[in-house]
Image 1 (cartoon, rainbow, N blue to C red):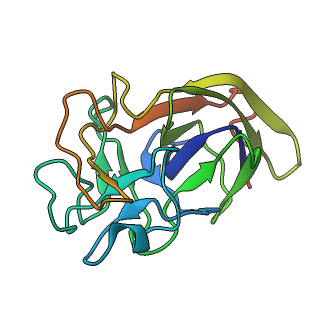
Image 2: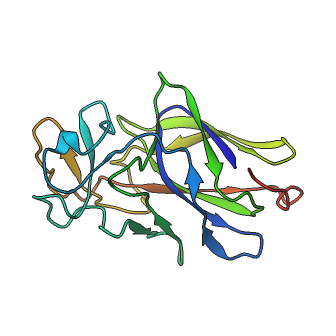
Length: 202
């Protein structure tokens, strides 16, 4: 698959609703940053970048100092909005996020196993306020379907798919206390046109 984003977002995994209406996790390639602090040692040495411009990153369950707000060691994120939907995050010890800024402009994800689908679920969040992005899905015949002007909520926004992820300050190493308003992941669904849903996404 070629799934192209513009502007500041983070994407951790895709779950795809395939053509037979079964929700299936489909691995993708294109992760470019490690944004999840895990294990022991300095928080800043556990990641390749902060998630936002204030030097904060997500935090895993096994990092010292976490309480009840963290990303589980299993890497499985169950949706609070869609029954039966879950996302499998990439390893916390390697690139696990697709991170794009206004400076880098855009990026491309590729489906490890090209296939058709009806709907595409995306788990994402934005730092330093919400952002707007365009998403382009490319098929094997090089035709595309474009989703324009998609708003990605700030990671302290509401109506989240997965709440109270937890965060850590990379400068001080301090794990932030749990808050009812964040940090959060959000899910979006991109429904492909019925006339092209049988096409192979690459």
